[in-house]
Image (cartoon, rainbow, N blue to C red; front, side, top):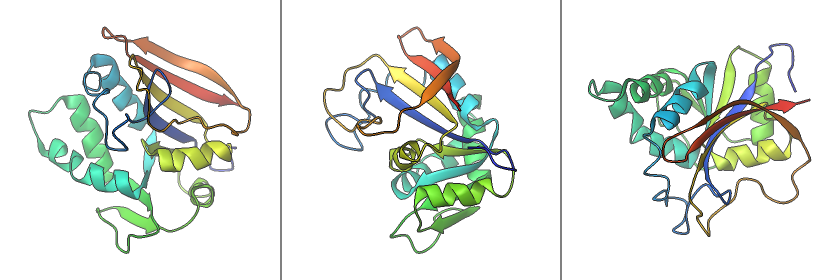
Amino acid sequence: MTDSTGRRVTANLSLSLDGRYHGPGGPSDFSMFAPYVTSEVARGQLTRIWEGATTALLGRINAEGFLGYWPTVAEDENADPRDRGYAKWLVDTEKVVLSTTLTEAPWEHTRVVNAPAADVVAELKATGEGDILVNSCPSVIKPLLAADLLDRLYLMIFPEVAGDGQRLFDDGLPASQWKLTHQETGELGEIAMVYDRVR
């Protein structure tokens, strides 16, 4: 759904072969993803997600987790330039954090909004320019999928079966068609894919 500003709503997420975004240990169990996130293909995808984006849309848990990690990468001259590029973008860009509990913004260039994701996206699409990136936040991606408000999906598929954990694509989503616009496979069997919504 593109309106007068033409802003796309994009989302990135890493998934196991069985479609899960974390392992059986709960929301912080990313052990199965660890071997792949620093691969050439994964780092290329990390750059791809933010290049056209001017707003990062985050959930509270991700915002707080990112705050503890990425600002130090932005300052680290020895960090991989792709990691550092993303980190600098994340620190400097407009961030909107969806939360029912936060009372003040945890970062600079950040505002906290207590509203449904679909309403926030509608407001963001009505102003400004550049992509709105839902940055690795399933709690935000899922309601936007349900409302058919995502225009692009950046997916990393890692060759692991998690066996348990939360899935991105729940039953009951509206049917939708997507066009594969980019695909790249890494040496470890990880696949970076970009899908654009066909409307």
